[in-house]
Image (cartoon, rainbow, N blue to C red; front, top):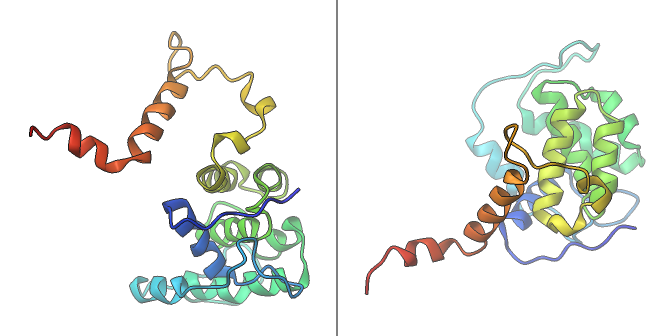
Length: 194
């Protein structure tokens, strides 16, 4: 079941606003999962975008332009049609290329950011470059919802190793990063002598 996403101004919150701004409402007359519509991130992104022009690879589409334009041209209509992740990603492709990866990630987040498990399952199951797309979608929904939103059955069998003999080290690194970034001013305060 999709859970609403709280709006607290956090970095994760701003990431989701970027995805919402890029794709607009979730279609069928509904607002996005956050209950907000774009806040102008795409125009700001467009302002800093280089003059680089991209063209879709390995498809019959005759198009060339900026990434933001491609996203605006492709993703909102797919959402409005009620396309599934597979249908949408098959339309523009979901391989290892900027014009395939970014629209796919943003589409999945627009449709499923409120349901982390479904978002990740759709990224893994319904896309071609599923390791990259699922990593990006997983990072976004993890930042939005936290570790508790990831099914325990997905985590239970993980060793958390970075080397042969450091079981659990990844989990220690995650906890340390979480503690550090949850209160970014704490580190600066610790190094200051009164």
